[in-house]
Picture 1 (cartoon, rainbow, N blue to C red):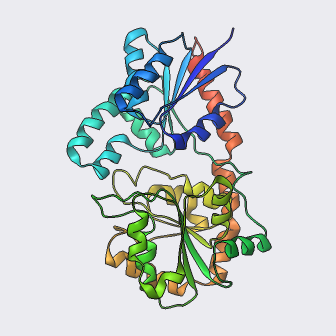
Picture 2: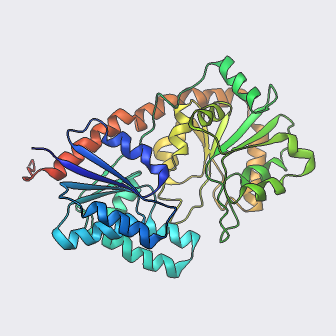
Picture 3: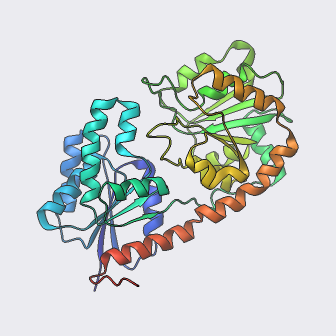
Length: 367
């Protein structure tokens, strides 16, 4: 019997993950990408047309955007459609941080309804998985992965070539970050701000900051760099997939900075496994994900807000004392940790096993 699965991708950034996890399945998989160029109302209608076009054995929702979530909830109440949800962020926590408590409360109701009516939940971290179970998900699994072939360590000569390509002088200690540089008005922050603020306080002269990405915060970050440091802060703008790998390999340390709140404490950004897979050690906020996944190949950043002067001063003192031996020792562990925790082949097998169980008509429980 042919199994028909509909995969709804609510964010363009998640399409690669969705296609990777469903690759090789013994099923007909139809992909539906939410169109971000139209209004939310029209995107909901477009997804509904696809969802309502035939009988689906399972719907796989990658991301928790309304265009997908509203429709799978509607299908559940309409004809008991089975669906699974995959998410890398707590919904209410995200809106609490980015929009405030009133919207966080409303999104929390949506989050509870989405999880309590799903057949299964896939969390990018075990903390999200536990949260989903508490909110009513019947079953859950943790799946975080990285493409270990695409993200890989360069040989020494190729690392130097990558550095030269981005205008980094030989012998520099390169501190970097990759991500969406979206400015958050509520916290007056975006990725990279802590690197620029700390650089102003560092006494050593061999430090270069590499900021990879684009967004509303790019110009703001550029304006924060004083004239005397402009040669030491390199902005790449948006890069293609291959260039992102090169930029990570140009770094000595990759930064994974989060706010210790109801968003940062639960998430695990895609940057972490990508840095580690490229053999780059990390400097990371001491959220649970650091101790579970990164500690042997990284340093815990100071606790507290990455916008605070105290945080920047502590970072500057730590960077000033960093030795090459310490960096090399951490770097030697990075790739093995990525393989241990984020092997995409293992992730795919977990996804296939989980969906096979969800699809089974009869549940067998071992005692």
